[in-house]
Length: 68
Image (tube, rainbow, N blue to C red; front, side, top):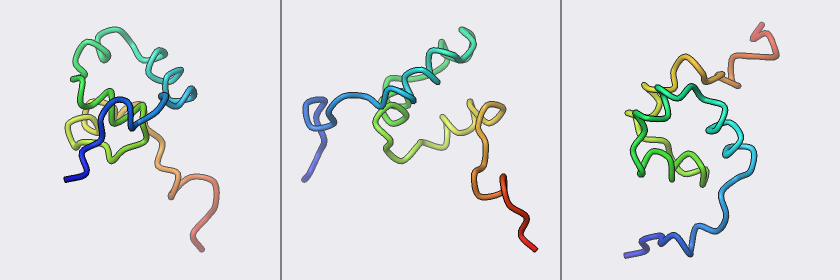
C-alpha cells in the first residue's frame, strides 16, 4: 500500500551516482531501471544487480578489521 513514487524517493545519493557513472559502459547497458533506482536511492538491491556488480562491490563486513 505504501508504494514509493519517484517524488517520494527524493534525490539520488550523489556518491552512488558517481559510482554508477564510473562503471564500464558494458555493465551500465545491462542494468534495468529498477536496478538503477534501487542503487541510487539506497533501497534493497535486487539479486540481479548484485550479480552484475559482484566484481565491483566491496563487502564492508569483511574488510578493515580482523575477526580474531
